[in-house]
Image (cartoon, rainbow, N blue to C red; front, side, top):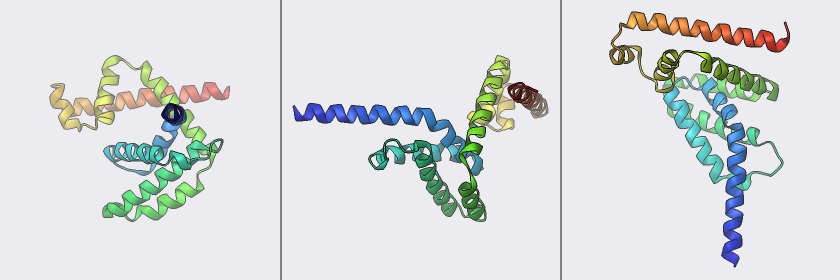
Amino acid sequence: MVDSKKDSGKDEKTREFLRLFIENQRRIYALIAMMVPCQADVEDLMQETSSVMWSKFDTFKPGSNFVAWGMRIAHILVLKYYNQNKKYQEFKEVISHHLVQQSPDVLDQMNYRIENLQNCFEKLKVEDRKLIKMRYEQGKEVKTISKILSTSSRTLYRSLARIHGLLFECIRRSSVMDRGV
C-alpha cells in the first residue's frame, strides 16, 4: 500500500516537471543559444540542463518561477562550458554580466521572436525548410549539403540568402502587424 502511494507521488512529480519543462524549454534553450557559439554545444548544454533540472527538481519550490530556476542552472552550465573551452575564456565575463542584466521582459520578447520565426518558417516551401533544417538543425556545412543536393556551393549560398531574406521580411511584417502599425 505504501509503495502505491510512493509510486503515485513519483508519477505526479514527473508530470509536474514535464508540464513546467515543456512550457519553458524554448526560453531556456534560447538563452543558451544566445551565449554559446556552436549549435552542437547548445544542444548538449540544453540536454545537460534538462538532466540537472530533473535531478534537482526536489529543490524547486512549487509556485516559484520555474523558468528563472532553469535559467540559473543553464547559466552555471554555460559558465562551466566556458571554463572547459579555453578558446572561449574571454567571453566568460561578458556572458556572466549579460545574464545578470537579462530581465523577464527581454526574455519574453525573445520568446515572442522565436514564435514569429517558427510561424514564418512554416510558411516556407518544403524544399526551403529542408535546406534550412539541414544547415542549422543538423549543422551540416554548405559543402556537404551541396554534395547531397548535387548543386554548387555558390547556388546553395544564394538559396540560403534568399531564404534568410524571406524569413526576415516575414518576421518584420509580423512585428509591424502585431504593433498595429
